[in-house]
Amino acid sequence: DLLAFFETRPKYAKLYLDIFCGKDLTAGTLSETRALPPSDWWYWGEATYRTDTKNEIFYVNVPETLEESWHAQAGASGLTLEKGEMYYITFEASCNGTGNLELFTNRNDNGNYPTVQISAFDLTRNLTKYSYAFVMTGDTHDDWSLCFNFGKGKGDFVIKNISISELK
Image 1 (cartoon, one colour):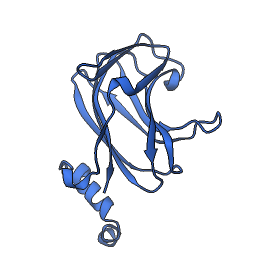
Image 2 (spheres, helix red, strand yellow; image 1 turned 30 degrees about the vertical axis):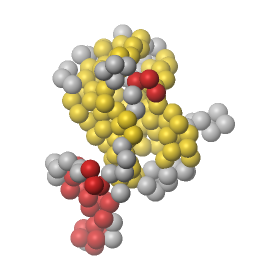
Image 3 (cartoon, rainbow, N blue to C red; image 1 turned 90 degrees about the vertical axis):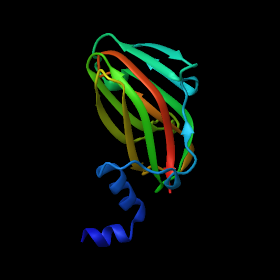
């Protein structure tokens, strides 16, 4: 029974109403929002990366679709994510070509990179606001990274106004 499910899980009920029914989350439901400006990001792989720190935008040019999505990547490290907690990520993005973008979390665990919460977005030419909510299934650590993979796309990507909040 759907009602019984939501009665015992108020965070999921709020998430369902806010995201799937088209309402915006209100400030009272989120913990402090952490902005992730371009200066906090690292860049790796077979692409050209440029940042505009004044306007908090980063640009990625992927001239050709790559063999693996992670062959062009950007990430912000040092995030504390707790197992079982719900998080809400927002960002604006566009691409003038094939806008295949993956969003995920991972961390370096002695040379292994456990990856959780993968979501894919098909970007348009117009700068659009995207959001993604997830329950952290990985172990609690203070060294998680929020990452974007660009390698299965092609063209000029624009990413701005990235933030993460814990959903209360």
